[in-house]
Length: 255
Image: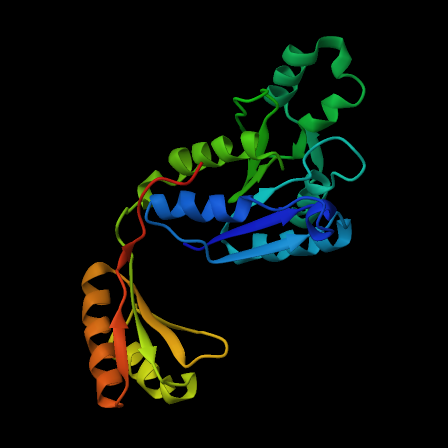
């Protein structure tokens, strides 16, 4: 199962706000032995957002969407998700009850719009101010405010995807290769990929210096064998290398 993120807001693309959701979601998934496969940043442009959700609904991926679920004219996420899925917006009774409980008569006529979700959606509880997000199919729509969105994303992961958790199931190992160019390592990288199914190989060169971080990602058992293969291959090519500490994809997300 692949996981994706959609982060919405003109304020991020203009630089008025700095996105923090991507790093946090990666950490949340990593803590649970999962990984983020893709991320897309979008402005408050309804046709573009609709097209993006149409693609992501078709993909079957689990998607976390941040931003644009308020009631102001620049909040287009709810409407775009409904259009992309081919369903109408419908006022969700449980979401409406929560908004009325918080605001009373002042919820009308505008705040109640935040209870309009694609028909068939389920609410995501919001402990911060009780105005819910929503889940529709395998997409989970959260506010743009981190103090609201992050606990809600934790709740979604623990409630809906706990059966997928495998902390420590992925390991990353790497070495620093000295004096090499990436082109000289490509055949070796392909050799390791072919010999160790399920392993990913990566290279991170240093600009202006012949220093390349060369590594593998996969299960702990696979990563160890693939790294030994990689080290032997680098040695056979005549390059020196320095070890780097392995990392396990587990632990607590940062504050």
